[in-house]
Amino acid sequence: MNLRKLALFLIDSAFLVVSYIFTYLLSTLSEVNTMMELDVFLHNFVFYYVTVFGVRCAAKVYSNVWRYANNKAYLAVIGCDFLSYCFATMFTRLVLHNFWYVSVWFTVSNIVIFTLLTLLSRFVYQMHMNIKNSATGEAYQIPVAIVGAGQTGSLLVEELLHNSNSHYRPVCFIDKDKYKVGGYISGIKVIGEDDMVFKHLKDLSVKEIFIALPKLSSSEAHVLYDYYSNTGCKIKLYDFAINGNTGNVATRRSLRELKIEDLLFRDTLQINDNDTYNYYRDKVVLVTGGGGSIGSEICRQLVKAEPRQLIIFDIYENNAYDIQQELHQNYGSKLNLAVEIGSIRDYNRLDDVFNKYKPDIVFHAAAHKHVPLMENSCCEALKNNVFGTLNTVNVSEKHAVKKFIMISTDKAVNPTNVMGATKRMCEMIVQSRFDSATTEFAAVRFGNVLGSNGSVIPLFRRQIEAGGPVTITDRRIIRYFMTIPEASQLVMQAGSMAKNGELYVLDMGNPVKIIDLAINMIKLAGYVPYRDINIIETGLRPGEKLYEELLIQNDDNLERTKNNLIFVERDAPLSREEVDKKLAVLKEALSGDNDDIKSALMQVVPTFHSADVVNSKAAESKEMQMCK
Image 1 (cartoon, helix red, strand yellow):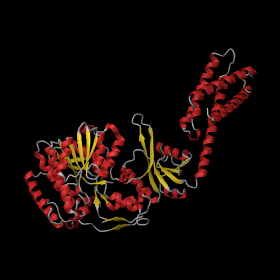
Image 2: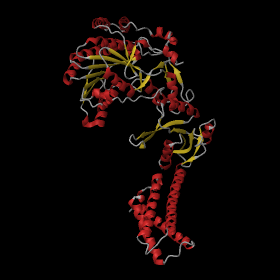
Image 3: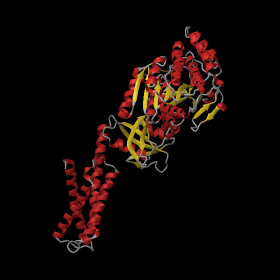
């Protein structure tokens, strides 16, 4: 027994002596009790001492660190002492009644007084340590308010109060429940979420607000964020996991910054489809562009399906190395992983890799996707996106790959730039293989992915960290957004159900204004837009469209799948011969300049129009109307 436990043991022993003597003295004043003889008095004390401390030690009461004790620890003390009382009563009345008769009144009084003294000492000690921590840490502790005076909020407050290293000092709860308002939880007052809440927060000098509400949807998070961001306080979320078997709050909890994903206009989707994962189980799967944002996430999701082998094919070795190390670290020898460096432009390299591994399924995610850069390097966009895809399609068909799934983009719909036009051409190539006897070819189209390489989110984040300004090309611009895991899981599900020549479209929800995205990200960082960090417009870039579309034609041309977020677009595919003629035009244009390539793309992709023409009519589009 260490010194701390020994000290507690001796203090409690003193409490038992005091309670026993006090009870004895009270008993002498009672008419139902007569004074015990000295030997009976001593024998009974020894019996109580052994019984009480024997039960406490068996229950490891003295192993608790009382500075951070919770209700469970206090209930353990009460439970142990109650058992001691029951045992003492039965033993003295049934076994020792001829020698040391002790009344029930005496036993109950003794145990109650002793237990109260024990609990009081713990409460006083814990309160003293909390006051001491507050006094020593008040200079650097940040006053915070907790939104949600329920179980989640009380858990958070307990953590903050009992953590001596915490930089936060909870000063109030905020709740809508009128029965809680005005009350106290762990000594912290509950104030109402009413017209006076901002004044209360200001009076209490609150600097940060923690949202501690269970099962918070994105729409609810957005409402709360919009409301409390007006206080000028930094807003954070308290996350916790729920134990699926017991329903109790698990120990894995975290306090984190709000992310832009939390403020999407719909809840982030979690796809848990056993049929989808079973489809990829025990298959050899190859992912081109496997080191990129989408490709690497597809790899992460595929690993969960336990494929027989996963092959990452990428030209950029740094990205390929990063995902290789991550998967090895997380799965070790359980995963049969191969990484091959190479370009989809190189037919022979592709042929060697396919011949070596003989993949059953191919996810084609390799592509040049940066719109402004491709406007200035049209030749590279054509070589990589169009003819690289053609190589991958041909090699897949040659080696009898069972299924080929190409990752497309909303920029392929009525494109206004080279990147979008090349991806539309890729869709045509894939759809033209509807008559393949060896391979099922399909394409999956979706919009922007939050946080992907080259996307607007990392750019805004860097600009905010640098103190601004945040730059947007045009405040009218709208885009569809989806999280990387969500997009990858839907791609996998679409791939498992895809049939030859089909083009799948993912439901991206409602479009989002880029200006709103910028404002929210600045607020999330704890700044005031246009005051702390400015937002400036730089003008539309070449080929940039004010809005994106997901569909080539109207909704009547769509067919819903078993997943109501995945649609099949019934666009009549071109024949191989028709696509070959288009490819011949593009191949000839490779010897020309950017203007020649753009002209050729407009010839072979009839929906490719100048961005200026499309933007001039943008206000009339359905997408722009949705964002009004």
